[in-house]
Length: 371
Image (cartoon, rainbow, N blue to C red; front, side):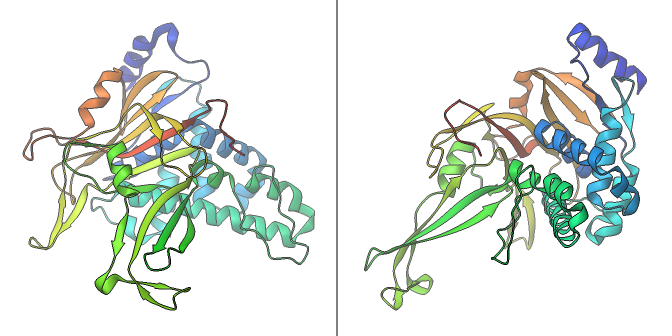
């Protein structure tokens, strides 16, 4: 372990980023799904900084009641404050808390990294919202807790309907989708907005993220049993429906749906399809902030031929270097190696290491308005 750490330090030499820490995470028997996602989140710098700030403002809270948020903040603080630049840390407290709180993650069965990420982000949001509501009923602590949960924006109720709280988790990961349905008889368009913390995309063989996003936003005709009830016509009508990204998030998390239920087999199958994910991504076809640009900084990779077994590793970009995290092991990789995780162009291939969750950070081009 020490040798691997010193090897990484040697590889980076005097280019080792000031103040940065590269630590592997110990595996507690099939916790690679957790480790790979935690590494991607640690190198999501705006999220890490806000979590560390939360921790430093809430040290007394951490003693009061342990939850997933305090355990995660404690783990990230532990990593960032290490004297050594590289090494291994055991995320024991975090994993224990996760298992205690959710029975899905209790067994030693192979777990799904996307399911874990989804659960974790939603859980963090719930904790921050509860803290903010508790602070509102206790005027003494209100200002500081609300500031922490809300970034620096605070919403005052004054007896009016309270706006949903926008936590710093939302500010990083939340985007808005709009679901547009056009009645083909009266041409009325009905739009419904919904928020998302990540996008799950269907995949096809020899495709790209851009084409998967196009398919996600493609127009679908509702007819026969799927007719749409139009409020204006007061009856079921044929309609056209499409989903568009209305407001792109700061951190765009894309989940590739590599596990598909095959009816004939009566089970899930892993799709090893080759799906190209670019280092730089332009989101066209968005309602607001047209042509939002993103840069890839993290990839959670599923290694294995099936959905019920295998392993997870992650690739992370930090200070213009790409690193490969496999539980306790951390090594440098060349940027060109990222493309070896696109998937296989043939159905049966010896390569079973496929990009599964992609993390993109918004690039400020100077003209987008990110409030």
